[in-house]
Length: 184
Image 1 (cartoon, rainbow, N blue to C red):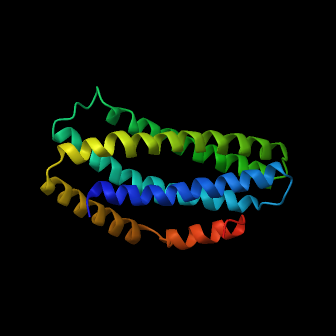
Image 2 (spheres, rainbow, N blue to C red):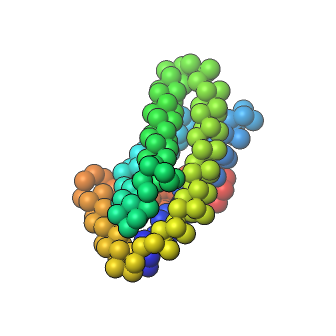
């Protein structure tokens, strides 16, 4: 499997998370109950899967693309790590708002809705750019041996992730979250 195929598959899991967030926000907007901890579980997923695992793989891909001739400062590759950082900032904002909500500040619910909507819009655009612009470029410029090296790097990242902390089954966690908001 090509490195870009692995990343595309992981994007599908992240898109599922975005659907879960949209459903949770809709429930909040309709005055239905959503556990504050639900959003903390989403934030944990974002930190552990999206950032520690998926973004590390993407950044390895981007480095390989630059090593194979893609100009680093004049390409979309230069923007992707910045966007990854923006996603982390949204994630930390979400955590802070959830803590306020848990402490009894009901105004935090509206801020959670706004933050989640902003984050989701950014993520959809980010995934679109990677999938439809950067990954096709990678598939054109990376020779098969570079794709193989990246796949091996991705396996190493997965192993390190599993060894470094309590690694949940991300797909099972996603199914649990989907069930909780009525998507399953």
